[in-house]
Length: 633
Picture 1 (cartoon, helix red, strand yellow):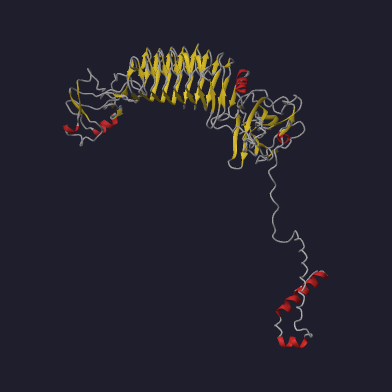
Picture 2 (picture 1 turned 90 degrees about the horizontal axis):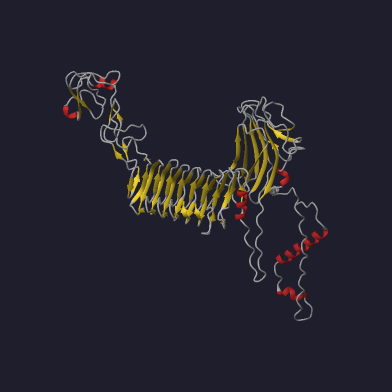
């Protein structure tokens, strides 16, 4: 045993302890020996107990080099500092780092770029300051990549910036994009622009999801030197949640749950939207907009509208939500939107309920642009006169309902769902429409002197009107395919009423449906009638309703088909002699030369031997001479 350093107290304590252990280990002394050495007392007192050993000294602290060798704990994710990302590039690149794999860096510049007909003439901040740009001379199709430092977000945030992408020839400008990174999915593109965007600085903004930990700008130059794209005035702002309600002093309540931050947009939503946290903010964003605006409403939000939100500028407005969707509620006292002046509106992923107005329970468009309702749930909306959901007149644009459910909507006179009067095209696709009604015409759609109606992939159930329980069309052509009409009720028993309005039913070649008139009861489309043998109709995609056209030369039409069976080469190869007197071959124009006789046409191509028996040639045709008749059938 080697002892490097032991104190005297330690040695003493150790020795005493060892002695105590040794004494305890000795054998017991016999009673006779004890009596010889005892004093005169008959029972001597027992010896005093041995004192306990002093406590051992605490061991010295372990050396940093002693095992186990534990690595230091990993550093925590740095908090996001707005100054780390916000940058006007007047002094340097702030915290942004060039990370292009090929080493092509963004260049800080003031004034114009060296190349003509591309790049800005000055920065965005002051006109005389600095900005970053991608030098494209000698760098065709090269990636320039500017990446932020690592950060952490408590909730979604906004990254805004100004960009410049000018190519005077509009041929060579490349692509500018923004990507965000999170630890689970990697890099995801949030925004992208390609090609010439004009000779001016443009502003843009993207939503950074709460899960993002980095963001980067990617500038991919085009195929020529006129691809100098520029970047300036990057700024960051994190959404501020509303303050939680204060708890009453008595009785004590647990603190309220923190408000949920709006989630990032889901495809196909555009990332270029702004969030609206209240009905007033939504209204102001639309009514004050001077340019196109996209607005995001958080899921489960419930906005109560006391009056219509109006838009009178020639702009495109998008109102969208995700997940279970936000609700816009007219409270049975107001329509939801009023459009004029060329304003177009897209409603996506929303719940639209209880809208009520004189016209257009959800949207009234008068001299407006297009109206789209996509992936939404529309319930219990009504109009006193026309258009329980949308009323479009005065040369408004198209009305489209896609991927939606419409239930229990009504109009006092016309168009329980849509009323189009001298207006754009109406289309309903991939949707279900049930329980809707109109007091007069068109339990679902009434269209008058409007552009063509299109119906595809729609189930119409339990709708009703006095005339045309589903559709009432006047001077409005339409196309209808993959649709079903079930349990719809009209006063005149008519499911679809057409007045000077032809319908294309999507029938296949060789089949047909009547294209005008009235259509009664329950049916599905296409449930088309087959043309008789020998006829196919006169169009390449759809047949005409009467199947009046005979088969083309070189064809034979079995029931409901237009199948090519014979060519000059096939006939001359397979038939030595056509039956009957004077039979000959097809000539260059697919005619048959010869005298009178019977020509037997097989149902399908076969050889002369296998088709030699009359019983195997069921289709026959009597020919006159070549001069008087051509065998075109």
